[in-house]
Image 1 (cartoon, rainbow, N blue to C red):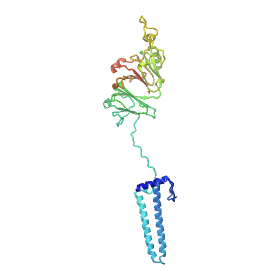
Image 2: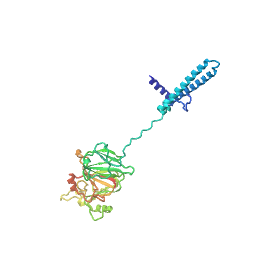
Image 3: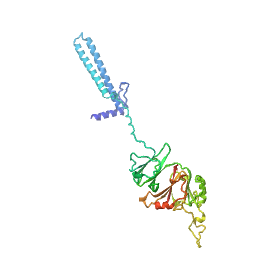
Image 4: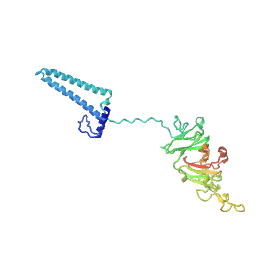
Length: 385
């Protein structure tokens, strides 16, 4: 009952203007917007003021009676009683105030100040890099970040990684990208992990090695060239632009993925790309080497029966990476989900490619022996070298 009345009373304080103007106590004036703690403090100060004023008035009245006692002796006893009662009241008031201040000095100054914000928990700061975890939610402790390739995860993590967390270096403008492989030395079934804003990503427990790169938001270079024939020559490999010009003329056909097409992650099926140079409609393969799809009665290919070969199968013999890119040849079979996401990958440049310009001779026999399949997709990442 008291709680209901008290609640209604406090609600009315805020809901309507005060009907009576209360005096200022200790510099405090009540209004319709006065919070409850300040209202309680006002009542406390008002009570103490009335109490001390009553003690002072009672002592003053007792003094007057005592002065008049010679004329009327009965007044002396009354004056003493009033003085004793006033002093007792003063002691009670002083004791009340002393108890409040002793228990908690803040109780004598009731206020409506807001609670201070609790300090943020001390979270361990992790350095930028790629973190590998055995559990699927990236919550394992004492994990070390990686910013360079991991050739072999070793017995502790090999085939046991279930999630990958990436922490980008925003101050340096670096974002990390990693590719997981099911064999050591960066080959075999693979999966790339790139979270643009960082964070955790679950993966299947298949990885034995990982390549780690610095992803670039803006591709930097000329592009990536795919050649039908090997273009080995005596020209210095450091002069990559001269090598590109030479191979464009002497490789039996080429296809270029230009820099403008690699703004982000470039993905294409190889059989959808033909050796048409820089996206031109005209085939760059010599006429007599183009695929014949129409023959005359003498078994000769007709003038209009030629077709430009695509990049599928083993039609690529060389790759020149003229810029800051990574090329991933991938075999993907959508009908084999249990073997996915990709059943075989071959990354270029390889670890032994000192100039990072790509392979001038692709060894398809080694790819067939290791993966058992021929890549049918190409993925190109813009990176920082």
